[in-house]
Image 1 (cartoon, helix red, strand yellow):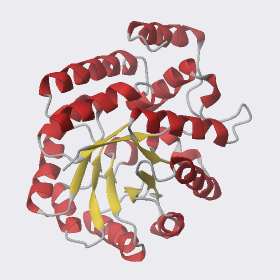
Image 2: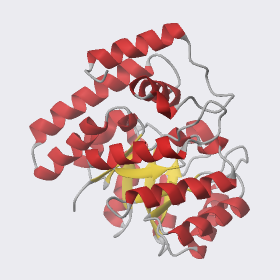
Image 3: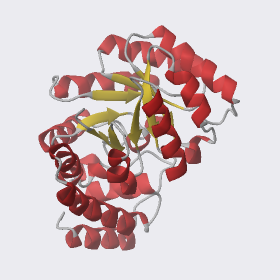
Length: 293
């Protein structure tokens, strides 16, 4: 099976914080040309700062720009099952390749509550649903045994693991090995190659916004069976991650690095971190070091 790379695409904003759809389309083209698939309205896409209507239009714009050349997954997850379901039905209508559902945030959930939440969404759409686990941001974690139970649902196709713990990723990969048709996509950028070598179907990367060709290079090398090249590309990707993320909150650093490459992406909606000159100088130095600026 061919392994797939998705980039958790940034959402571009104008100076007045309205969405810059033209600039977002340009970022879609950049990723498609590099050979990467798209995930929109995710963590790196500022999904929690977008309105319902904006998420629908954003998805329509991305799907239109892609034009079937690569796959598109969109995140529908919200705190309430009610709104998650409404969004998922809209994305189902638009015609995406997958609907990711981040675990509810703010509302504390039991594992049984998570099973009910994800199953309700998966029951209501035709598009394959992907669980999305990022407990550091949502405070709700999909236990591996819960993932195993949900993997038996006919319309739950896999999980995006953004927890960062190799032990959890290993447990999810064990579920994928045991359950036909259930896929694992790795979120942590330092684990891309490790996950692919251990059975992951692919990765969904935020860092790929700033380094799309290196991300695509890892997948290309893996699919070609060239482990030495894959390791070389992964080493570059991981080193860039270490240097960039040392400066602050990862999605904010990715967005700012991309801004310094192309100012049309804009800043993020408030109350996101505001850029400062000293930090920009540090990011620019990192970008020059990796020949990205």
